[in-house]
Image 1 (cartoon, one colour):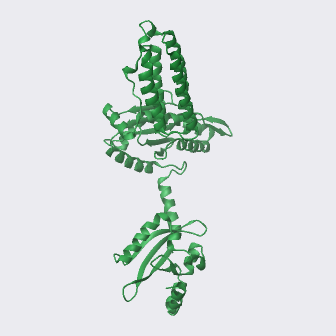
Image 2 (spheres, one colour):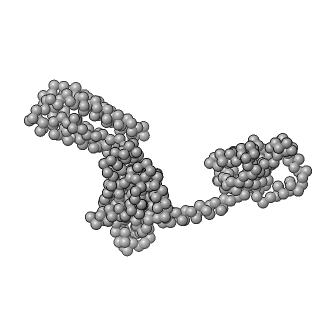
Image 3 (cartoon, helix red, strand yellow):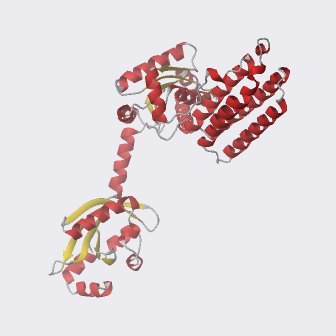
Amino acid sequence: MKSDNFKDLLKSDKLFFSAFQFASIGMALVAPDGNWLMVNKALCDLIGYNEEELMELTFQDITHPDDLEQDLQYVNKILSGELETYQMEKRYFHKGGNTIYSLLSVSLVKDEKASPLFFISQIQDITDRKLLEKELVRQATEDMLTGISNRRRFYDLAEREILRGGRYNEPMVLLMMDIDYFKNINDTYGHSIGDEALRQITAICSSKLRSFDIFGRIGGEEFSILLIKTDAVIGHQIAERLRRSVENHILTTDKGVVRLTISIGGVAFSKNEHSLDYRLNQSDEALYRAKSTGRNRIVLVDTLTESDTQEKALHTGFIRLEWNKAYECGNKQIDEQHRNLFDRSNKLLTAMIDRQETAICQQYIEELICDVSDHFKAEEQIIEQSAYPNVEEHRHIHQTLTDTALAMAKRHKEGQLEITEVFDYLAIQVVSQHMLIEDRKFFSYFQDGSSQL
């Protein structure tokens, strides 16, 4: 039935037509396929479209996509006879682009053969109520000064995450962070500067943490952070990133420059055998040791056992190179440099898996390239002195590996480098193909005397 004919038909019932048109809430008659048959002035005012514009759209066109699936499920249930009516909170897109919150009530009108004719929809504007609810929730869960989770919200989120992670034996790190000499800042510069210090330190730390970590102010100048799927090594790296970033920050005031530092205590653990309060006490004790030994430092306690560490590596997908005595050639300098390259490589792999910021990963890549270059030069000099006949061939292999590393560094700057490529280069090209095959070719040239070079 065309909407114009349908409207003419309804106009014959003056009482219904008048009640529909002049209702104080939005009302619409909607065809089973989603097209509007009639809309009233209140609905047009609510959505921002005039009647002609709205009639060109379907209700799906102006429904928020996150609410559309539930709405359509209700529609299908009414059409199938499972429901007679339904009511839901639903968001519409206003013509101006903003979102309207509504309470939608829907029922189905059928003909004498029980075939569906149209839906009667009542749309009540509840935007102010929803915004008020959001504001009340924000005030109840957000620290008003810094904008991050308050103590109550941090406890709720952290307890939930510890319970979830404990089921899968995932490693995590709980940090307690305290601003050093904060009372002196308040006493010297005033509480307004103290508040600004809290805000700026919060902003610095928020920018350095990962999106899934839980960060909250739990009182005064104390903050707590729960690092998800994080072992002690990565946890210490993240804590050091926070400490260094705050130390390098300058707070400018009318009374002069304020240098800020933080002390951090933490505990690495897995499972949920202890409560959040227990872990916070462990972190607090570590924080006390950090402050009592000079401040502006980190003390992190690793409670993971050796077996926990092995399981933790599985859960985090942690990739690392393990040193083996079979890699030793007998020359102390070369062996020491090889072990150092393993440590450098693992540091880079950890940073990339942890998705640390690009600048930090780039720094690790450049440090690794520098160490590789220095090692290759030293190794070439040593094997040349040992009378190894294929020095030039070995030097050419070194150059190829160096060129590959430089190309990878360039691709990382461009955001095109994958962790699998880094691991392939380090584990396959450097360790498996070079150290275990090419380097072994000169092992026999190191006699007892030359091994000390």
